[in-house]
Image 1: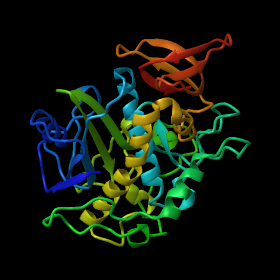
Image 2: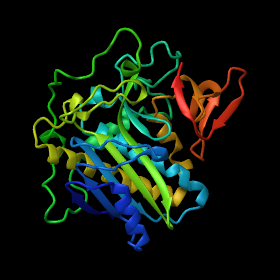
Image 3: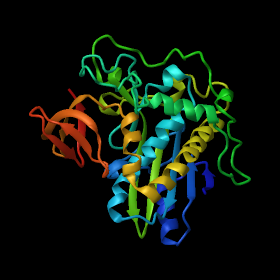
Length: 329
């Protein structure tokens, strides 16, 4: 489905896709870059994109009800979570989760303790009838293997073969510390971000993944503290570009069948799978608007068919949250 072009450097992969939409390029064009000089993410926020990350944008022309379009980013998040989990060992894969609506994060090994007795965000929720933890989905992906799923042009770098070629079971010395006292970084760190924009009759999906720290990496705190696949042992046995291509290819491979299902059946058919991959499921949170004002607090009980976060409030009422910044309590 995807026609992949790999670029050494570009202003913004999203802008390349938008121009392609305007030029009536058919669905399926994917642009990948090793570096962006003018990248941006959700709500137009500037996105620093140095070497060491995987930056990819996809041109889509889905024939769906317009009301479904806001859920596309959630579908991409499922694909990214599964792809990244398929590239690392099982005990690390279970820590890769989705933070609603469109971030993929690495949760601390002790995450979930003290955040509600039924908080399954640490990925250790027991299997029950009708429920398969997200780590099971990752295991299925690993069983299928990760190989080059799309053609490259003749000038693109040779990508990694399956994860065995890029994965080291020895974690690097700089792997994320697990602090005994709660902190944002000990709770979770950001592995990937996703954007989805409707533009000129098409849709531009943007994906950024932290593969390995850039040479000039700076300490970043708070909710945007980064995590890297290299922290989990991925990429140490192959060249940087090969590791980056392995990540991008795995995402495209996971996304294609999910996208087809979404086009045919809508997000409702995927909402349970999203919830199973969520770091927030069962956790008590507060949601703030763009001004920082808290609009509601409650326990996360999945997402609905429209991709809205379902919160069980303290009075027992269920509220559907369409947008906002999520903060753990």
